[in-house]
Image (cartoon, rainbow, N blue to C red; front, side):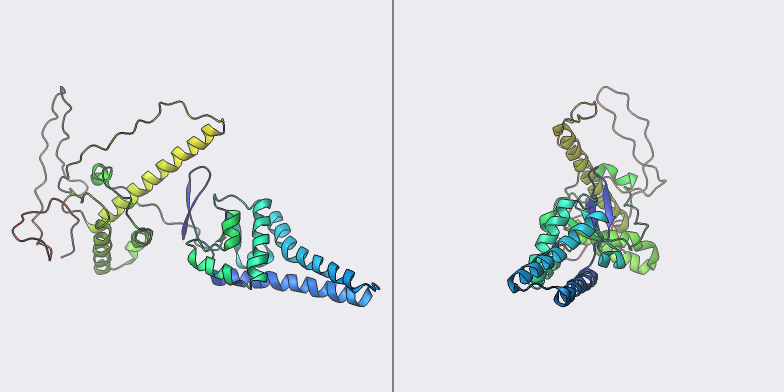
Length: 331
């Protein structure tokens, strides 16, 4: 799966086509093209009365180029990114913004494909597809396209939700160092957590939360379950990502003369310092918020009983007291 961002700053979780299925679609198209070339060659050889062999050779070369370059351009433009092979295997070429393939994109893909697939026997295309996170060959890189599979799951997993108890802490965390492979693993864990046994849920959650904590600071409030901690991190990362995309889309509309909505420009200020409080499960009483200077203080609310102190982790300094925060490891 891969994240595809549309021109309206909407993130779609699409299934990119893998190299084996793309190779099978290419072989189907190659068989159709080869059949057309052989048929015309036999027809010309049996019926033409051309005595100039050079003229006949030039005609056949021109026809071969038209078949191997013009065929994908014409078919993919008319079918919005589908050749015969892609149609048979449920593939489609789309732009990087999720839109349909344009004529110029089909032309760039066909020209680059003639070089990397036929003249260079497909070597550069295979290497580039293996190195690209989205399985792009050189033609896709030049044209700004990607090949997706339309036969994947129709109901994508719901995005992770922000636990209300961790919203204040999540707004202050540093998430820029999170690696993409860890984010993908955490998403898969949350989407399939209900299908796992309780023991596997705890084990995988603790392991993923521990890996995530190495790239996230400050630590969460004490007593946060691993899956709640991971959900809060992913939900906050998604919120910031969508916010950046929205700002970019507004900047593009403003540059194109379409204007922006009538509201004051955002003033960016450093996030306020957040003091981690003990994690309270849903439904438990929480401490009353601090009243601003000059305002009447809120009535006191009974705080929940503090969670028992967890055992010291291996490698932690002895006699250092209770930890300031962290998720709850399984017993």
